[in-house]
Length: 371
Ligand SMILES: Cc1ncc(COP(=O)(O)O)c(C=O)c1O
Image (cartoon, rainbow, N blue to C red):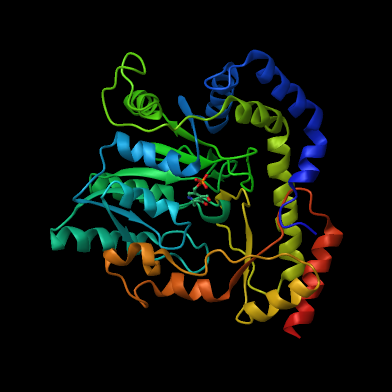
């Protein structure tokens, strides 16, 4: 059994992928080829925003809008400790300061009340200026954007959506990646919409943000790449990756549906056995991961391993406790909800092509391990 079965997906569209790659090879347009423009147009329309900017990774998709907004020393940027390192890493790269607010115990997304407490505390201390919020759509389900955007407005802050796990999800009928000044997603192969290497995309309705991102993506270019008006990066998305994603896009909506079925089957088979994921009724998750919780997590994972059932832990160590962030001054106990989740959570195989039989095998193995 595979944790994520990219092979099953590839089998369905291999001919189309081969043909699309061949077209790029025949054109020799490996950078900024027409496939990039086509993919940006298609995905921008899918998300429902005016502009989409392909980039080299989900990390760059977060970093580039931060650069466009001029985030830097003295800025407090609020996010969750229960996420992948990149969410806060980009803040630290720019010498701004990550401020963590703990998550909800059931959705694992940022707790809006704790977020407001953290903003108030930062304002009161007066050392840093509350500049922005980076909510994360953890495991594929959106954070509470109505409340978060209202808070941002109240405190005159911007929002960048970390949608690296949620491309394909919806919040109150609106697509993930469409919230805040910019939405950032990742095309890492294991993501719900992945390429065959590294890639990402930024979505925005803001023309100035769009223009700045185009410049930042190519070393801060002005009228051309040898006219540099700001410090940027090489943040481009390869044409070949775009060609692959155009083939995958044709089956993507169907795959999002299939993921709903797989999640529903797990919920049915694992009810009362482990804590299954809670998704708010206004959300449709992209199910980047299917994470369950049980106090005997380590034992269950070991038993599943013996039966060749792959599992993984997202995230065993919250960001506020990472060595990379010691300078932020957090200690164990500061984010109790996030820390407690990290001790009992584990992810099960999750992909659109998982069969009910395989899911039954997983469920039986978990039930047996718990005893
Ligand atoms: C929540 C989150 N943010 C950011 C990233 C970074 O994306 P990438 O690995 O494409 O740089 C990831 C991906 O692993 C992620 O899961």
